[in-house]
Each structure stands twice: as structure tokens, then as C-alpha cells.
Length: 286
Ligand SMILES: NC(=O)c1ccc[n+]([C@@H]2O[C@H](COP(=O)([O-])OP(=O)(O)OC[C@H]3O[C@@H](n4cnc5c(N)ncnc54)[C@H](OP(=O)(O)O)[C@@H]3O)[C@@H](O)[C@H]2O)c1
Image: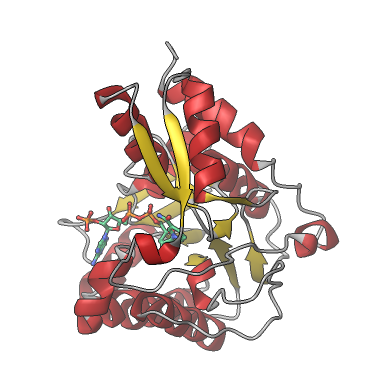
């Protein structure tokens, strides 16, 4: 298959390339050579490569920066996504667009399903929600894959931040937020699921693709340090109020994956399994 990966040098894009480069022909569409906000250049790149499928990872992903750079966030996450959806539809290309738990406000407990109404509470979430809406409206042959709490080879991610803090000072005491919960998800787990999606051209619609199981950042940090072997590091729980950020963070980002089974797609691994595999490959000497 010929696959065009936007944001192909980002954290998820790099993992997808690694998973797919042996079996598929890939076009890595990333800055500076390919700017997806340039509709003409994007169209020309699509015409030259003539992909069977576009996997859309490019996004403005810094949630706090989006709050102060609203226009830039919407230009990339919403307008460029709409342009890409239109370009794919016009050329009969399947579009797999990566989205986020931030389309939900995350104020309620319990797992959100794909059918639950969205209610973004941040500029990032609103811009990604507008991108989702454009994909649904403009490109019928689409998959929207919502992911969350992502980490992958090379980072940057929460796992890498924790690993660095521990490596710098292995006997320290850290405070980590305990009143926000979600589904930590490895890029490898997303890549495995999307590989199954590639083999199912009949599938369309929105799917949640986060790892199974829910934990707080505090619990996630403790498991990272345990796997890395930092036995003398103490992790104390703290509240969101003790760690204020420019953009509000969801208290519950947990997503239901029941629809994957209904569609005949493989189950996602648990977050503990995926994290253990990742730590082994990223820090083999741990
Ligand atoms: N990271 C998470 O925790 C998380 C959680 C939920 C959902 N997601 C979604 O997952 C997807 C992938 O995330 P990620 O963490 O892999 O993102 P990332 O590491 O920030 O990668 C995004 C890539 O897109 C590139 N890009 C930016 N503007 C572009 C443009 N105009 N044209 C072409 N490429 C452009 C970036 O280049 P520069 O680096 O040069 O800007 C970067 O290489 C995104 O859609 C994101 O919204 C991520």
C-alpha cells in the first residue's frame, strides 16, 4: 500500500514509519518540505505520490501554546485538516485522521464512548473537534482515531520527562497530580491497531484507540519509576490546583474501546503491558 503520513517526523509519525516501512511504500509529509497548510503544495504532493491512504498526524499539539496562539491552532488542526479531507475525497483516498480525548471536557468520571457529545474545554480541543467535524463532512471514506496520554520512542512525553527527572536525581521526592485520570497509550499500540485498520478498507467512522485501563498521572509515574528500577525515589500525590497550567486539563480522559470489538478490530493492550514493553525497548539497560 502507498501511505502518505502527515507529521511523519513527529512522535506518532516516526513510530508508524518504523512499523510500516517494510510492508508499505511511505511518503513522509512534514515541515519544511511539505506544509499541509499550503493547499496547492499539498495537492501536488498527493498527485505525485498517489497514495491509497493518508494518515494524518500533523497537528499543533502543545495544549498550552494553543491557548495563546488560537489562530495558528485552528489554521493547522481545523483548516488544514479540512483542506486535507477535501483533497482526499476529490482523489478517492482513504483518510485516517488522528484526534484526541481533548474533544471532551473530561469533567465527568467514567469512560467516554464515540457517540457521547463532545464539549472541548480548550483551544486545542476545539481546534481538533473542528478538524474532526470537517473530516466527517468532507471525506466519507475516513477513520477518526482518538488517542490520549501518548508516549513513543524519542518522546517528548510524560514518560521521558519522568525518566529524565529520575536520572538527574534518583533519590528525590516528586509531587505528581493524582486527580486527573486517563489511559496512558504507547505509539506502538496505536500503530498495531492502525495496522489492523489498514487491512480493513470497509471500516469507516470514529474509534477510540487508547490502551486499556485507567490510572492517574501519579499512578502512571509510580509504574514508570518501578519499571526503570528507581527504588529510592518517592512520588507524592498532589492536586491539579497545586500544579496550575495555562490550559485546563481534563479530570477524566478515559475512553471506552467497546466499539473496536464490535467492528472486529483487535483489543488494545493494557497500559501496564504497553508501558513495560516500551520501557524495555527505550531503556534496555533498566
Ligand atoms: N502527544 C499526545 O499526547 C497526543 C494525545 C492525543 C492525541 N494526539 C494527536 O496525535 C497526533 C500525533 O501527535 P504527536 O504527539 O506525534 O505530535 P508531534 O510529535 O507534535 O508531531 C506533529 C508533527 O507535525 C509536524 N507539523 C507541524 N505543522 C505542520 C505542517 N504545517 N505541515 C506538515 N507537518 C507539520 C510537526 O513538525 P514540527 O515539529 O516542525 O512542528 C511534527 O513533526 C496529533 O494529531 C495529535 O493531536 C497526541
